[in-house]
Amino acid sequence: MTIPNLITVFRLVLVPLVVLMILQGRWGVAFAAFVVAGVSDGLDGYIARRFDMRSEFGAIIDPLADKALLVSIYITLAVIGVLPDWVAVVVVSRDVIMVMAIMVSWLMERRMEIRPMFVGKANTAAQIGYAATILATKAFGIGLGGLEDALMIAVAVLTVLSGGAYLGKWLTHMTA
Image (cartoon, rainbow, N blue to C red; front, side):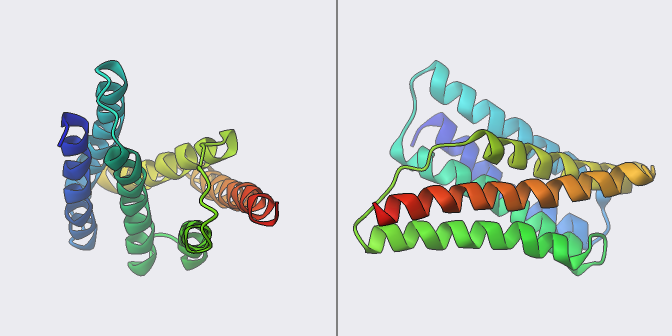
């Protein structure tokens, strides 16, 4: 077990804490834990690259930890009525479809390497930014007016675009 992998596991442990804090309306703690998770994501990647501590386990668990955090936050915020349900459905559906596609390719023994695409990175950044914004507005009692809606639409559009791009790559791979 490498240091980056331990940091990633720590990020996974933060997921239930963030969800619980949201459910209890403890927005400041939820926001702080989310920020710690974000910093830990950057830190584990930096350490893995800088000190050549990359591992197969890390390559799998790191994106899963990211998805666990984001999906949990979006579902929780929708369940308590902070986000419209459709936003959570779009975010979660994209990830479920991607995981199912990967499983199908493995079952058909046509494994494919998933390489990050620009639209996927932009989508992840938008999802993180929007979640952080929502948590911050709740934690600090600030309103952003139309900016909140603009961020929500950006997340929805980028989520659909990135899901379509990855699905297109997968379909091309599977039918080649």
